[in-house]
Image 1 (tube, rainbow, N blue to C red):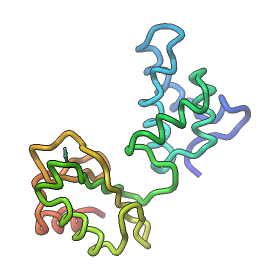
Image 2 (image 1 turned 30 degrees about the vertical axis):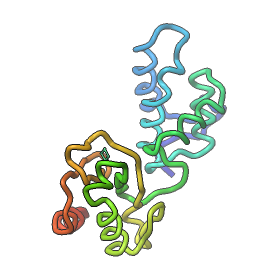
Image 3 (image 1 turned 180 degrees about the vertical axis):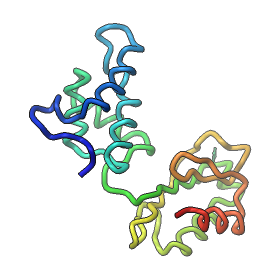
Image 4 (image 1 turned 90 degrees about the horizontal axis):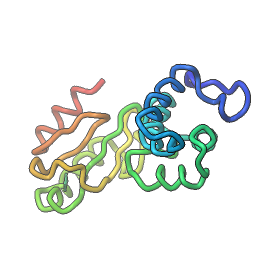
Length: 169
Ligand code: FES
């Protein structure tokens, strides 16, 4: 269990630190528009919950932001940066959109999945990596590229991929 607290009603699902972080985002928007903070709030919750969002967390966030539960689910399921099931310690997001595709993303996928022994959408048996296929990450001039956790890695080659993966503990 992470540092989240299940101490009462849905509003109590977050600990003080998480509530303060979310409140800072809510304060950036006009009064009564707390739902505008949903994306940063989902990031905060995901980071604090071992990299994924459970249904109780999303339900609690909807209550906290005074917005329909379905709207939180819509956001969380639309963006590939949010995870709805447990993930490995590191997340590899490989862009396969047009610029990356034209510059070799198929080879990137093939190399990474065969090296790690896990396919797209899967987690390695040691729980170290989850591999995902994602849409354009806005780094097209560095194609082919991937994101590992928060870091972008561009102009990938097989040798470069091996170096990057070897450097991750
Ligand atoms: S197409 Fe891959 S980053 Fe844009």
